[in-house]
Length: 155
Image (cartoon, rainbow, N blue to C red; front, side, top):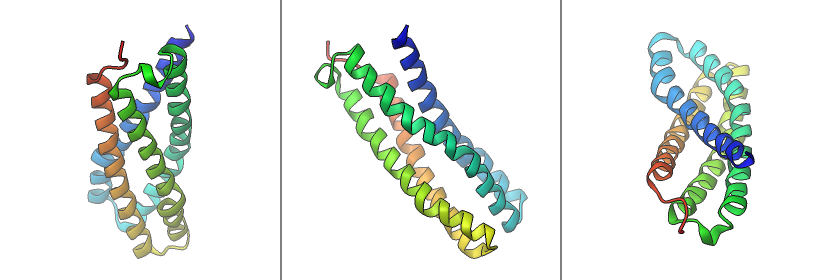
């Protein structure tokens, strides 16, 4: 039963994080750019990220905790899992580090620029975030492809 819960939490965390990035990048971004003037668009993004990023913090906590729990409790350790798990682990940590940079640097500066109505600076920060999200979304899709197509264990 506990294995099923760990797997469910792991898959849901990955799905919601990557799905949220996909929605933001592919759906919300083009609509906001087409429909809103810069100040409204920048306020929208600061608000959207302020709601989404606390969820991402939960995901970046749950993913390694459940992942390592499964590796060591279900599969018996790193030596018993296949290359796909090692790749997912490495890419997952890279995604977490990229997210942490996004949160503590460009996002913090975006919020400050929006509060002080420095629209050019806010637009520059939003563009940085867009580029970072594109990278993390690509990595997340690669991880999903590895997870669904790779061998989980060596045995």
